[in-house]
Length: 267
Image (tube, rainbow, N blue to C red; front, side, top):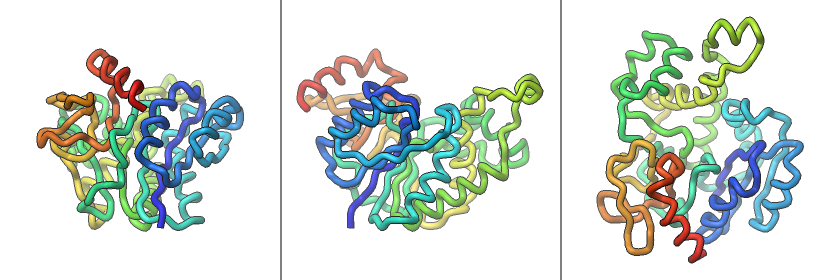
């Protein structure tokens, strides 16, 4: 049975996802499904050379971050896969096949290097989505990243169902000026983080496993304390092993730019 990588690229230029796809296809030949917008004609054309399936939606690019979970859910119920990686694409590149690892959980989450209470962004998302009482339940937990979640299909579907339901149930509380003018509150665009962290850290899913950022198979660079590379310019963890994929490298682009150039030369 094949694996699947599913991501959303609404409103992105092909140049913004080219590094993601080039590195991915160096190591991985199974299915890739990408959500694109109705007007993303150049992106659609660019995806064809990477043998990717795409699904066109009319969702605005600012809204897809929350709506993608329900869309994924509908699509994944129609086909059978072994394991699925739900991930971002604009700020990810691959150093190996992400499925070539003996994952411990039926569903696997990848932690950052900071507690929720020590991050103003994640604290804000949870407080304005779930309120103070529920925030206090999980504020001492380490932040997990909703931009990389990997597991078996049945468990990913369970996760997507929870995400879809909780996104509808717990709405981000906009500032008054946005409410009365019917505008988007841009501060709320990342609040899928609130739902993923609440669902996982309150054990609403079973057979989960949390991987530490420092020694796990997937790196989330923004809060990564130690950044080290091997002689092939691969980012390595504290055990000296190359990460399977690197997420949020753009947050420290001054460190990664030269390495990225070397990687591109060798593809």
